[in-house]
Amino acid sequence: MKDIFDCKLLLVDDEPELRRMVGSMLRQSGFKKIISAADCSHARLLFTSEKPDGVILDVSLPDGDGFSLMREFRSISAAPVLFLSARDEDENRLLGLGLGADDYITKPFLPRELILRLHAVLNRTYFPVVLNQKEKPVFYLGKQ
Figure 1 (cartoon, rainbow, N blue to C red):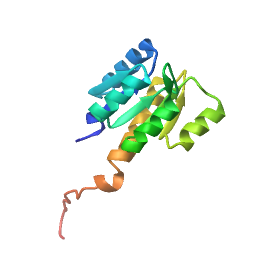
Figure 2 (figure 1 turned 45 degrees about the horizontal axis):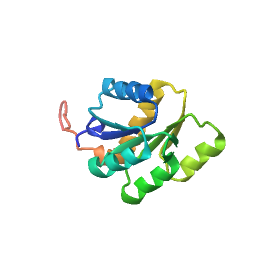
Figure 3 (figure 1 turned 135 degrees about the vertical axis):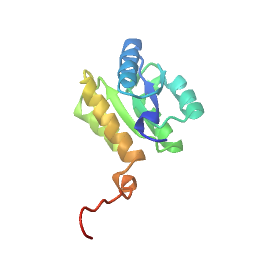
Figure 4 (figure 1 turned 90 degrees about the vertical axis):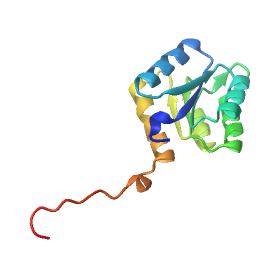
């Protein structure tokens, strides 16, 4: 993977319009590989077969909850998880973060904020600054 735009993302939300909107935003921002699921069972299948590099996950899903699903994902992968949920109570945000989510954004949300937070999480996970510091050529002017 050359940069974060090569990351495969799994988007899990039961609202078809939100999946379309977020998927479109991600593509416009440069992400090329976006897969989506409307429920836990489809998300499980995609997670194991596609092995995404990151997950955007709703808490309330028709056949379960995102908190339990994240625990399952984390038992087999360290892929970052960003919650995107209408549940905006402090208790839910703290639960999600306490379970190990990399971020928690509440709906309604600012599209640019979602993209920036996703960039931050993916960069921190896959392209840490200490690994990106390559030796740069040095040019000298005058005597050395």
